[in-house]
Length: 193
Image (cartoon, rainbow, N blue to C red; front, top):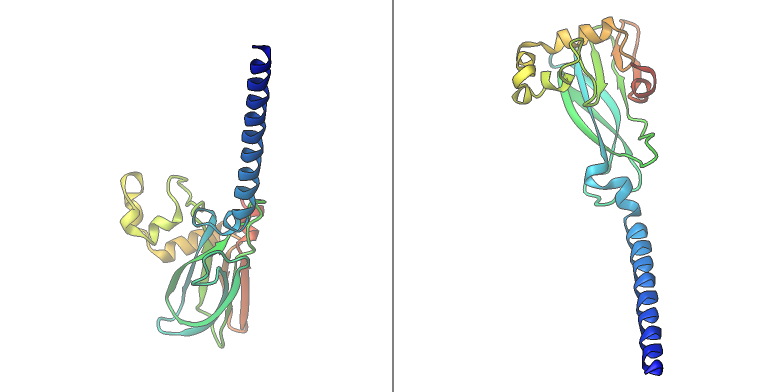
């Protein structure tokens, strides 16, 4: 009897060691196979918004950071450069990194003989003075509901005026002699209350 018990004991130890080893290997595989997904998974993307206004119909050249289109698990963001007609609004998506620093999302505008162009970049966390709703509700008015319903009547110019008045660091405005201006979302993430 003691020989059988000892044999069963050894077998149960072997099974437990096997389960622990299998659990360890599966954990390692999971963590290593999701390495790229941590940086680029759909839920980990950083989204930000670009809004540029000025003389309607004016064409300006812009550059901004975005994840590459059509790449399932990109490892790096790319700089997109394009000519756009004002007014211009776009949601850009970037790879967001697990260290919390995020990409250095930016907007650079090049224009000539321009004193009317104004622009902002912002993310979902940016709010107006009432601190109730995100600025984005003034752009996607279909989402302006309940306490934010009055955002449907807020003009984008008044949003820009407010952000200028509080020295929002991701606001830019051209003067007559300026040809290129750039703002970084990083300046808001780390310097804005």
